[in-house]
Length: 132
Image 1 (cartoon, rainbow, N blue to C red):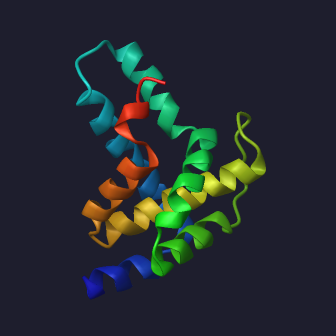
Image 2: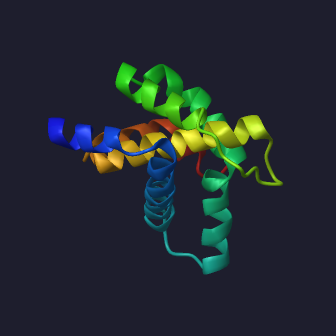
């Protein structure tokens, strides 16, 4: 695992956010598909509750007290990374916080800490809040 963490630490925060965005999306899709069969438009609607910068930013509030020092450091590297993009649907602060979250999930993925990523995802988005 030490080698995996070294490898993950060698990537820039935005590269980690790039892979983290995909990995986070996979966790979301796994959650909603395992929630039961439904039509595609419903799946897209359910996924939107998780993948917007606004929802990811609010998830950070729930997540921060649960992070260890290394995870918090990775999140902050991602949050503070210089980007040239801000979506129309979110403010700059929300976008940077969401980028930090994606960076963290990318780091966990690259460092083969997928059990920890799943644990954090489930704590960030408890299943009982699915239908709200």
